[in-house]
Image (cartoon, rainbow, N blue to C red):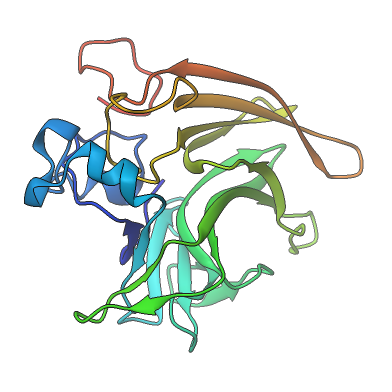
Length: 248
């Protein structure tokens, strides 16, 4: 799973690496990690006072890899003419891209799994009513929320309509998606500070943290969320702890 290049919450913080933080997050361990080492003397109190904040740099490529599906396919985001608006597609080994039937939006991260023999895709999509330009050319917004959506391939080569399975007042950043054949199992970070990489529970409410949710697929092909459980605080697990695939 991968945070989108060019789209990110507001403060640069350092982070550890691990197979569950997202494919791109694993490759960006140089980005700062805990609240104790935030850059530019930004404090947690500053972040709390600032409120929700998200920045988006204008895409430089039409297609940007989001997550590797298998040895031959990638999930990519597709840049649109409108700033910070993207579609999604699957690029095969020959470079051909099949666009997916999704609403254009700011897709922050994604994960995939096989569910009942079909490819399933889960994403965090950032929603906002507008962006403003900063002097360095970055687009930012304070008016945003996030949703987690899922969609699955059908047996005829098409796709289901994306369905929102998580929509909270706080940000929800997708971690992993797996399947037990009956349910999709999604892990996500619940983040009232809108700072995905700020791995500390300091100044956070008790509801912030890492969660697991199950989504049961009905005979009609809809996903019914249930069994939402808080796993732990908004912190990275140590390298020697029993892993859930989300970090080291």
